[in-house]
Length: 301
Image (tube, rainbow, N blue to C red; front, side):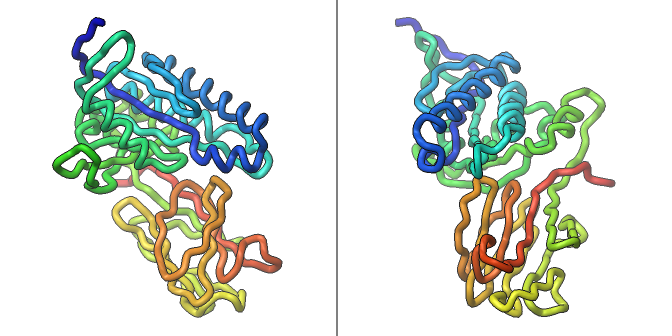
């Protein structure tokens, strides 16, 4: 057995919600969808000088020469998967984690703390997310570093101290190309686009809080009698958007995986795209729905 120590970026990616996929599509169609996702991920790895180490079920483990290549490969995976048409009422999503550091290579496989940390980052990610570490972000080129944001310092199994966890803002494919093209660094900001009927609000640095309910003075006024006078509030905290339910009947929250959950006197991070309905399901007759889309745009000076 031969082994040597190398500095690489290790990446783990898997299909999010594959159990639901099998339940809704059936074994044959779900297996075909997972295999298609695996093939897409492999192509993205190859496109950015990476190597597929192995695949296990619906997961891919890959190695990249550096943090820049891993970020670009991960972003390419997400953009390719996001461009796929839905399978009935199910939209395929993947979650990705990566970390750059020193690894031990033995006969084509990799071991060590960096591998374990990369796997932990994938575990933190939700469908449609790319998660990495603060030390990996520090290793990125200055231009690509602009396409990340800090999430939190979290406890990681096997680590004595907390690890700074960051998210890659992959949704803006054009912005990532701009950042990598050598035309100079571009600052970006996260915004939340809210649509209610024919009206659209954009939450940014100038609009950091939106109240929703039956009160006509709220930024979004709901007429549905199932809604409370102050049903909920969306707040911008750093570069993230949180919805807090303040109602009697709860808020029904749907993210892009199509799963609807009920939120009662609690809060949730709004990610990707989805919908909020007030007091009953969005599928109920006459339900009023607010759709949301998390976006990233160039920040004006």
